[in-house]
Image 1: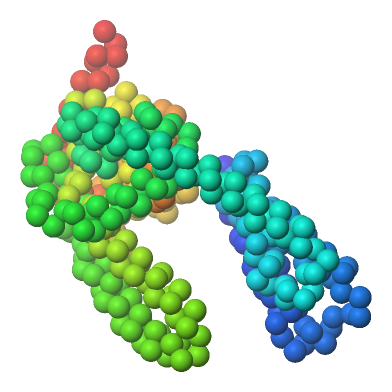
Image 2 (image 1 turned 180 degrees about the horizontal axis):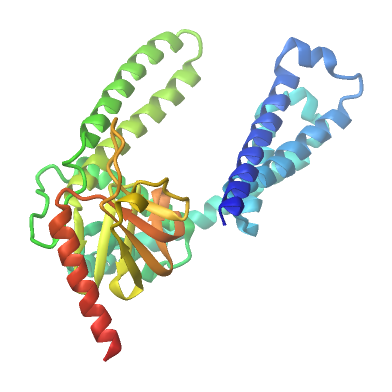
Length: 357
């Protein structure tokens, strides 16, 4: 199993390296003196090769890097590659290939119209989603996701959009809210400097934004604006992440655990799905494998989980941007480990007794 995981990581790394190589080599070919001197008199063959690189090879390498494949995703990446070719390859070289280039634009327009229709459906379903959230006793991160999944179970675009909505809500709409201090909730960050570290990153981004924007404004306005937008987005994300982290402590209910790590990841674990609770210090101090999801606030010190939940079968977790991934084990570190272990064991034993009845 370890060799298989290592092999998958190697394949992913190689795919990313080749992807960057394909994109950078095509850019250098048309935008450097060395590349321009290497171009032959008849450019059609070279341009065709670049178009194939960007619309077929690059998408396949990207899918290999992400280690997932879907026809819709591949078509979107192909269209994106054709549009990227319009910017990478000088327009005078594309005179004979305008039909192919416009094909990419056409596909993107159709997909955008489709996504806009989904957006309209989301807006139309906002009232029932809000009613579903208000009637739920779960934290917002979980109740909102459940309500959206009920209405749009397989719509990736909707899940990404809702993930962004949560980010902006926590960044700007939660400053008057206080975290829950109920007996069945446990915070994950007070034994670390994780939030302080997040605030330091925000300060660093602000300083970098001011410095880079001033340096690039006179040389490349477009690049300075793009970096400014990306940095503002990063700041909003980190602020929202801190608020989500504070306001959503781990919750132990009768049926299972509801655990989140800010906006980065969250997971629902039924006690019926837990095979074993591992507390052995030697095991907990070993390197955590890729089949294990961590809910551990890390800073500058090396820390280990308080317990490891081994699941009967892999359970799905929701990651950043609504990405779904299954894990076989869950590593958890809380601020009150003794009380947490006690309540988890009690609820697990009760679930096991109920299962035998």
